Amino acid sequence: MFVNNAIHPGEPCGVEASMLLFRDIATNEKLAAELDEVVVVAVPFYNIGGGLNRGSYSRANQNGPKAHGFRGNAQNLDLNRDFIKCDTKNAMTFNQIYNYWQPDVFIDNHTSNGADYQYTITLIATQHNKLDKNLAGYMQQQMLPQLYSQMEEKGWEMTPYVYARSTPDEGIAGFLDLPRYSSGYAALHNAISFMPETHMLKPFKDRVMSVYTFMESMIETMVKDKASIQDVRRKAIENTRNKKIFELNWQLDMNKSDTINFKGYTAEYRTSAISFQPRLFYERKRPYNKPIAHYNYYKVTQTVEKPIAYIIPQAYSQVIERLRWNKVDMQRLTENVELEVEMYRIGDLETTDYPYEKHYLHSKVQLEPEIKTWLFRKGDYVVYANQESNRYIVETLEPHAPDSYFAWNFFDGILMQKEYFSSYVFEDLATEMLEENEALRDELEKKRQEDEEFANSARAQLNFVYRNSPYYEPTHRLYPVGRLLIDKPLPLSKN
Image (cartoon, rainbow, N blue to C red; front, side, top):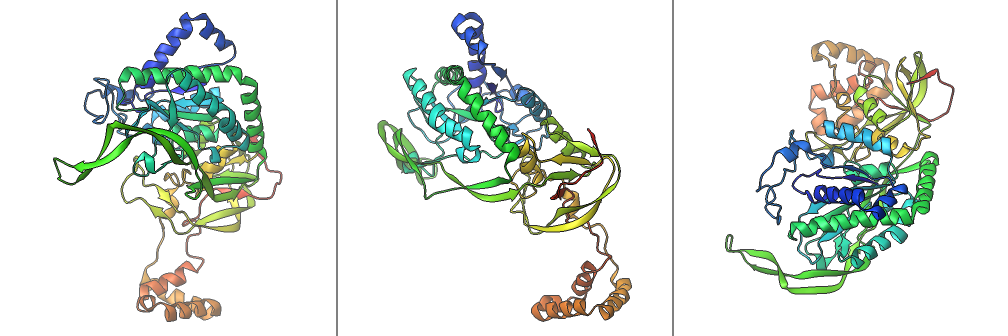
């Protein structure tokens, strides 16, 4: 069991709870005996920079503690968006520590903002539709029912995280934990992961004790279900090695839901004393206990068939570094070699207009696959897709995945054209090419007929000829990672 605390230092319940848990393990023979069956690893305080930025006012909606850290780290980055891009030493180190231990269960302790309700603690479980079927089946059918039952018996009744559409009584939704988040990162490595979210308005002592009890209950569950957990993880890892089609992205299915019993407070609207407009208010004098909809099913919107191997040019050292931190097995070419591979030409895409966690994130990436004979150099890296880390490999190296290295700008150099032409020089060359190439001449004429703006632009027409000539640079918008589709012997050495 791997526990992470204070990724958001304004939410320090897990820090105190972990200290109390470790103290009690050290002094209680019954608790200590559980360590014969379960290894417990904890990061006591992950976001040191944010913890040192200490004050009393960064959590305006939270009931204590009196002083606490700040959400951003010393670079003002949210570390719970950094697990793939690794802009911080925190994430660089975490990747390595996590993959050293390779936990079965991962817990990242948080405190929530949002609606008001009766529970002290809520729970985000790994989105089950993203998990291997063996892990998801065990988590949904055995582990979660046990945990909810244990927590209720110990006086800390839980509910799924209140990710509300507007107010909880209108239904709550499951959270899509993409790999940028800690629980989504853990899912890439076939761990069952959880984010306990204590409720901001409950007393700090209660929040701490509810997290303590959750971790205590998790250890008890892992001791009891040790064989089952090891079995489903082993099956998940084997499936990850062997499966051919990988899911890349998901969308909430609003046509499918479960019904859960929810203990909330009645939502009312009153006139604001500030704006004189209606304001939301939860009336604690009017609690309720009633069934609500829980939308916790995601449908797959993107898949990809894995190649035999990915071939990564050695120039992309930051990508290689991150793969290495995640225990990805890599080999290197021992000589230059021309290979027939599938490569992607990047078509349309969307990019954020404003920085998101220091990056201009790409999304909705359209790809144009091309089969090419390409020269790879001695020292380039070959990553075979037959590993237990296949999910990490595929979801970071496929450029249209939402948290791929391409999405996080590691390959942005290919998006900018490097060579152009001077119109007055290229005009004569373009004329010769059109005289010799009837098909190109017909394409140009067709585009002129279809596009009035194009027909009125001399530069656009010359550029059309240029882009269809040998002078246009072949690497523009060409994603440089090759996909080897046919297995063949390669001249390789271990990295």
